[in-house]
Image 1 (cartoon, helix red, strand yellow):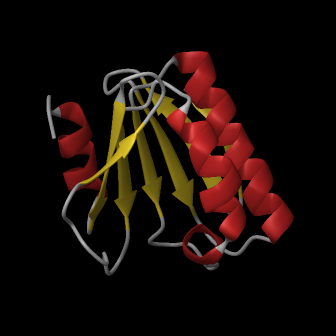
Image 2 (image 1 turned 90 degrees about the horizontal axis):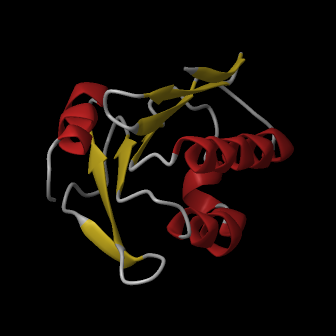
Length: 129
């Protein structure tokens, strides 16, 4: 289910994985970035997705990595969703070890970097970490 398709990003839902896939495709402004991140949250709530894949390989911006808004505003909202796995696809992943974050209630969110979309999709499809 395609939710957003713009020159700089695509956000869709994969029902087989119960996962939202957020693919950055080029340069965007900070306002475009924040609107896209809110659209991602909206789709997560609408679908009750258990996974989120963010593909940064074609991103021509570094808002995800350097923007305090992402960490201080968006990420806490992500923790309030049903997402249990966050896979970040990057050309040069900084670390591939899983990171666990306390989410809503007694739930946990596990995040992990991957070099390819296929590896991220495979990990999201697996049970456990």
